[in-house]
Image (cartoon, rainbow, N blue to C red; front, top):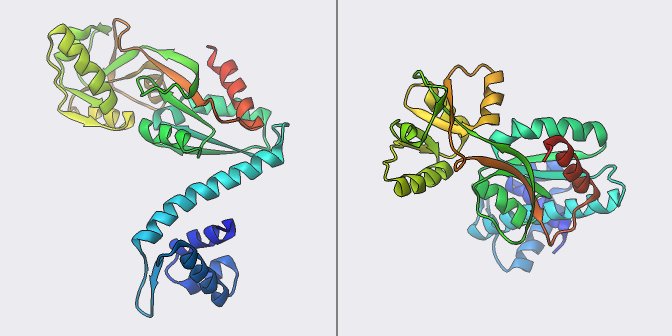
Length: 290
């Protein structure tokens, strides 16, 4: 399957007609139509329903588009790696990261990395922890930054970037520290991962978890806590980052170490890292300090 044909197909997917896609690609409409027919013949399926009234992606077309995105990304990465060779100058670095780390730890790391490697193009892909790990497993990204807890795999190589205590945030006045019993006495707004962790602790200690609101991202938890819906629990470094931007919630340090979290850099052991990615790993080690 021709890679250029896949690139052209992705432009078709984002267009409203073959003529519009042809204009975007600066090619003749007849040539693009011929290329699409050849692709459909190779796949043995109709990819786009098209007539005077309709231009719609079929289910087969949707499946090919999903695969084509990954194929094109991997091809681009391979070309960049060959071009940059072993020098680390130029090329592209693809980083998967959760949103709270993208606006926190990654910001400081990238400042150092860009200063040392200005010719490298950095592409950041944000998402939930499962989607971040999926991008690593699929080979779409070179490295990832995630927080524990997450589902580990023996195929990952990991490096600890930092260690964090947990902070409880609330509009209500809080003491300087809170323990588990005090935490579980509050209505909590939690991410799904922290809900699972606290549920295990509650069951073990004979406590009851009251978490009426659960969501995917830490930023959402903070926003909802600001409305007075309840308290939330987040890593201390994330709290520090939001406090620099005007966060006005009261805070208390959670005692004990069971809920402590780590930020980890990970990549696949079986994948050869590009020079740009290896340089990023070195920068992480120096900036993270662990």
